[in-house]
Image 1 (cartoon, rainbow, N blue to C red):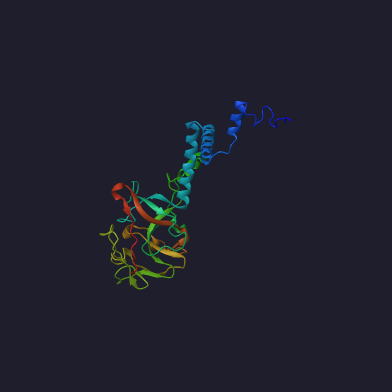
Image 2 (cartoon, rainbow, N blue to C red; image 1 turned 90 degrees about the vertical axis):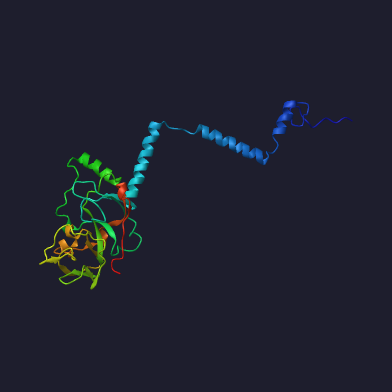
Length: 283
């Protein structure tokens, strides 16, 4: 008795159809190498289909992102400031109406613990009594003022505040003075290092009311309140520092909270490129 075949025409078992046999061959499991090649082809196809933008669309996006990152850096990490006066000569150069040293100020120096120490050169916002001669450089026009404010965020213009740069001489709880007979600036009865001070002095000192070693008129003793700093310029006879604000409610001192950051380096002009020393002046 003859039995009929179980293979139906057109099925994989019909070896008489070449096309069907080829399809059956391709249905076999792929090797690992073939899988990798297939994934690679698929990835290349996706990349080919990825949407691209013309340069005049991409460039503004890149510019906005770059400016945003620069603004964040200036606000939280550090920024450049320009020295506007001679009060920190010879450490930092500057003069009224000229291009003084550009300095990099580290805003993270005291943010995660630790306060300014004697010898540190810092930038700070002036307390109220220090701001009597400050004049804002912002325009009265609201549009122009907005542009100026935006430029200050990315470091092209200075912030609209009276930022000053001086050296820390004494900290909270310490007593500072310079009286007749003292060999120099005294903190807690000991003379501080003044080797960085401008010499010779910019202006003569009246020997009746002060001395060269004091860098001007006698003052003190003043006990610095906790959380405050006694600040002085390195150009002692040409610096409106803590000595000149003794009559205010803070006795001329500056709150630590007013400190913007520590001066780390001079970055311009290139001939002045270098770090800024912060010696331990109370050895």
